[in-house]
Every structure is written in C-alpha cells, then in structure tokens.
Length: 162
Image 1 (cartoon, rainbow, N blue to C red):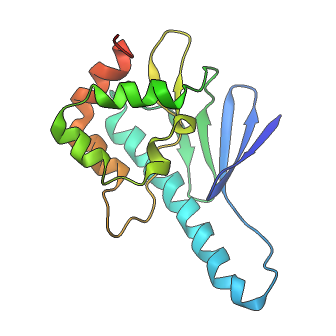
Image 2 (image 1 turned 90 degrees about the vertical axis):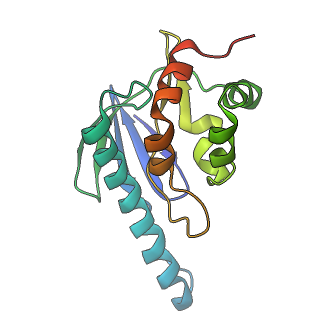
C-alpha cells in the first residue's frame, strides 16, 4: 500500500484501487479549526464531483473510473500509467482551440498540473484527480469538461503531436 497526500485529500493506493478520503489534520491552535473543516469539506466536494462526473459522463475516455463515493470516502480505479512532464502537458494544452485555452486560463492551475493526469500504457491520457475545487472567480473543472469534452476526448486519445 502507498499513501499520497494532496491539498484536500489523502489517497490510499491499494492493489488496483485508489481510495480517497478528505484530508483531516489536527489543529495546532483553536483558530485553525475553521480551516480544517473547510479543507475537509473541499475534499468531500472533490470526491462527490468526481463520482458524479463519472456516473454522468462515463463515455468520456479521459476520466478514470470512479466506482463508489459517499463524500467522505471514494473508490476509484488506480492508474498504473506514468505522470507526464510539464512540457508534455503544456504541449497537449497548446493543441486545444483558442476558446478552450481561454477557459484553461480560468481554471485553478493545480487542477491541470501533470500530477492530476496520467498517461496509461495504451498511450491514452486520463485525469486521475478531477474533483471540483471551490473557485469563486474562476471556472470549475467539471464546467470545463462539459464545454470541451469532445476536444479533450480526441486530444487525450491521440496524445502530443509533434
């Protein structure tokens, strides 16, 4: 078993499963309690939006399957691919239309970083972390997917073109 800590969740990699739970930290000061609850709720939102996105849009080949979630725990298929480099991801994003690139700039950069997308052995890129974050001034990742799913499906299937 391997354990990975993200910004709002902890992921337990067990066999062919990725088990995601919201991050819970012990506060050092009484004032930190609000931040702990906020981080926990953000982790729950991420778990639930990943699950709903998968349930509704499972035909989109760029999403890693999510088998179950009740917010405080989510079970996803584990990816055994490789993490692409920043240059590889930049080259991938640059192949998108100008309209999509404008929307990319409205996303939280954390959501489209290489650690959230894996290149699997079949050459297909898939998001492994695609839960929505609280983004009051930007665009939710799920909204980006809804607007650009056809382009993403084609792009993530063919990969980086030289």
